[in-house]
Amino acid sequence: MNEEEKIDLRKFGNSFDEISSNFRWSFHDPVKVIDNNEGVALIDDDKEVQYSELRVKSNGVAKILQDLGVKKGDVVGVLLPQSPMLPIGILGVYKLGGVALSLSTLFGTDALTYRLKHSEAKVVITDDDGKRKLKDANVNIPVITEVNESTANFETFSPEPTTPTQLFYTSGTTGEPKGVLLPRSWILGHLPAWQIAYEFDGRKFITPSEWAWIGGLGDLLLSTLYYGRTVVVYSRKGRLDVMDLIHVIQKHKVDRAFLVPTVVRMLRGEEELSKAELPLRAVMSGGEPVTPDLVEWSMKRGFHLNQIYGQTEVNLVICSSISLGVYKPGYLGRPCPGHFVSIMENGNPSRSGEIVVKLPDPSAMIGYFKKPEETSSKMRNGWVFTGDIGELSNDGYISFLGRNDDIIKSSGYRISPIEVESVISSHPAVKTCSVVGVEDPLRGVIIAAFVVLKEGYDPSLELENSIKNHVKGKLAYYAYPRIVKFVDTLPTTVTGKIRRKELRELIRRELNESS
Image (cartoon, rainbow, N blue to C red; front, side, top):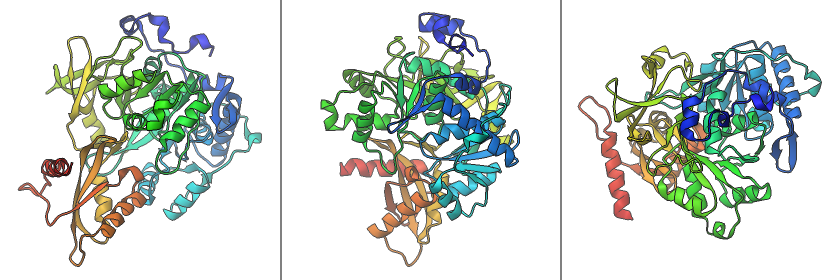
């Protein structure tokens, strides 16, 4: 495909309204587009990785998978940090016609085991650290850790728009994580928001977010590779060092980034940044509300902070762009070109109610993997029901008011309270527990756990830290409770359901009194 044939919103008009009115989808395989690009695809520390290397090595991965017996539609796990091998692996799976299962390197043994077994993954593409994790999890599955370039000849599979391609497991209120199965068109569905939020330009892109999630993989990595730009690898272990991120941005003259609001708040709170020159010009942000004060601060620092909205099930459907004049304080933005977003209350159009997305939509999932009932509940009557509550303004902007379930969104991650409670309850000292999200000025929301101990155990700082570390090891670092409160009982309804609202009010009151 020639450069002129790629999706480019500017062909459809000069204003957001013009583009939205004129834009029409046309399907083509984004993998073949990436294959045809030339130049520098990735910068890993000081090493440049060319698009030609991505092409050759991803062909090699596809051939190795084929030799291992992987067939069209089979699931292949990808357990890697930010590194050149991650897009090489994912593109290799796509070329074979397989389904890439993205796995976070932050996952503990329980989280990994569940996802690999439920998805029936045939192979895992990983590194030495991943191999050790799989061994600890007692997962007996073939692994690929390197590519022999001599196996690089491979005829790429030609997909349909609906061909199953990508699998993410996202948390839900009913407990078990749900596998969100996306079609080949999912990358194309991200492109209008990519162009608008990054303001059509940019040469070098970065995100500290893991490429194992739809934000890192879709909002930045694969969409950026589609347009033939350069992605700067930013791999870290443990907590984010904001000044290190700033140093990398300065060193490589990065002008575009995907940053969740928590990271932007961290940047704002870094004193040294006030003296630092930033080459950033446009930042895409989402995963939690982008507050007007962050937008104002960003503009003073010389870049636009453009908010996007979506979820793994149907991503990047609302966007904003300061340069295009699509920005209203307190609102998410407007529906992206090519996506029809509305508000419904009791199945009818409304100014206030649930945010819904009209089907068909290229970003929309095929369904929840092996969960037809949950799929039917989420996708019905020609709409995807997001579970988020919003309002529609007279001029077409949509706001986010909150969720109609108990999902916790913290630092850009979507966390199931049931999943966290299950892990805490497996601690030998814990009798029962409940977790809630509580507002935090830095991360937006943090997890607070209310824990009832078994007889023979007493509250202590040592036990509090033991519970936190238990969750970090079993589930994920970002999912551990930053507040652990020991209680004698948990408030319940007459039917035995825990009153989470009461717990939220209790912890908010205590935090307000302590501050």
